[in-house]
Image 1: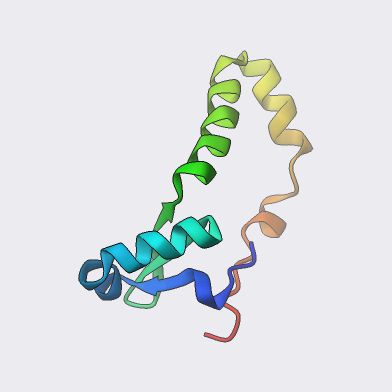
Image 2: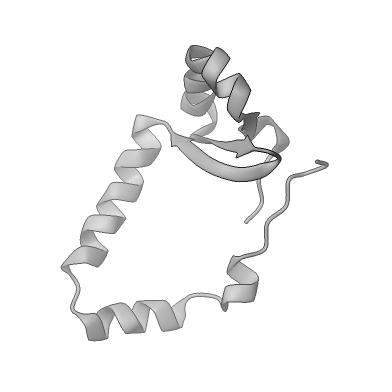
Length: 88
């Protein structure tokens, strides 16, 4: 997963400037909140959440065997788990 520097905020910045962080999420789609320089939470814009919730609802409707097929088609964990903070 590649994370843009402008999509990262600290936990304290989120607490102090929630409105600005929410506006940033609306513009970017989502922002990543760090606590002690570690990923802690993600704030999604409502539009981004709507896109994701459709996918989640679809996956929840699948049977276990179909979910297993979807999981098998995904990149291996090592590839999916790759995180960068673009200069942090």
